Figure 1 (spheres, rainbow, N blue to C red):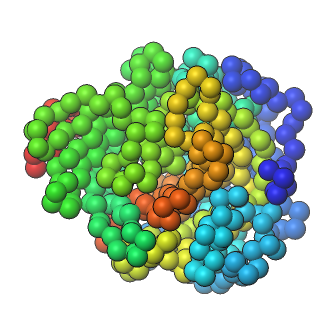
Figure 2: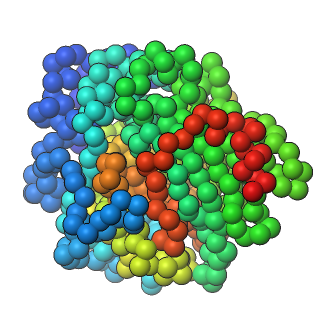
Figure 3: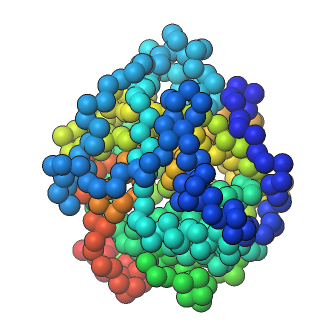
Amino acid sequence: MNKVTLLSLAISMVLSTGAVAKISAEQTAKLSSELTPVGATRAGNKDGSIPKWTGGITKAPAGYTVGEHHVDPYPDDKIQFTITASNLSDYKNLLTPGQIKLFETYPDTYKMNIYQTRRSASYPEHVYQAVKDNATRAELVQEGNGIKQAAVGIPFPVPANGLEVIWNHTLRYRGESVTRQAGQASPTSSGSFTFVGLDETLLLPYGVEGASPEELEQTNILFKFKQKVTEPARLAGTALLVHETMDQIKTPRQAWTYNTGQRRVRRAPNVAYDAPGTASDGLRTTDDFDMYNGAPNRYNWTLKGKQELLIPYNDYRLHSNKVKYEDILHAGHINPDLVRYEKHRVWVVEANLKESTRHIYKKRVFYIDEDSWQVAVTDIYDNRDELYRVGVAHVINYYDVPTLWSTLDVFHDLQSRRYIAMGLDNEAKMYDFTQKLDEGDFTPAALRREGRR
């Protein structure tokens, strides 16, 4: 962290993973004054390059219709400056080691176009109220591998340790249910790729308006996720079902897969940790999905503080249905002319592998956007303590919900000089946050039906 400027943490912070996270009524009141409703610093920075948060996007821009791809609410914003390998040294204090490594790996083609900062993150009012309720009661349990007394909103708006920050990422609001047609691709070193189409549904009991901690603890379910491969033909019909739990020691993640060749649904206890992700060419692990997911019990988590960082934000051009997959997917990295970077404050959390456990990643450093609790960048190290992979989330505000969420996640493998891009939806139907899903849609029997269609 010697290449960046960290904002100092309060001396009084409790850094043990077993800390009780409840905060006082006085601290909670700051969520309406000094802090935003989800715990970010409300004020801008000293030089004004990060503005004050004023509510984010609270209504859809003109020209948007629900069900369509989200139009850019900032179409007139211009590039302020561009970082290339030739001027990289001037901006290293605003970049992660992984981001710097991308410039070194692709010096002739990689660049960052920097725009003015737009603090566009916003959530429904009932979510803000839920965050206040959670702040005075939420606790980690099972040495941080579970949570209780929280619902709907993030549990720890004033985090005391790294585990609380990573739980905020896991439990950030993304609506109550989502269906989406998207896909992924892993271009070769020459840039050629095969598109893998995916139909995905996500049921989020934790995010349901009016959900109570008691109900959630009784069911012990945070969310249910179902995924079916639709193309190419050799993979079509393969399906996955995951039930993610609130207390992951009491009941670990439950997962099932459907294999078209065997025409059987099987329990899949290995869909976790560093098992290869679906059709990923070995370029990501299962717990890389959504930048990080699953039980945190294989790592020791340390909260390093906050820093200012250049991260992808408001990437509506990358999200547009006027862009084709071939326009995005280039050799080495995605098309940098489609990516918008802005300066934002991020929480920095370091995860170091415990001596008694195993994972192909020895260390991971997460940079989490303060306004949304979305992991923006993750630097990943191998067992030789060398940078191995760099994960980058390209976010937009889905203002019909509203929620700030990734439109594309990209994991760069520095050793193979390849990457995987997940969430490609430019040529597909837009996410549907309105469809009512039923618990019956997320059973092994439902998975079997999905796989046979």
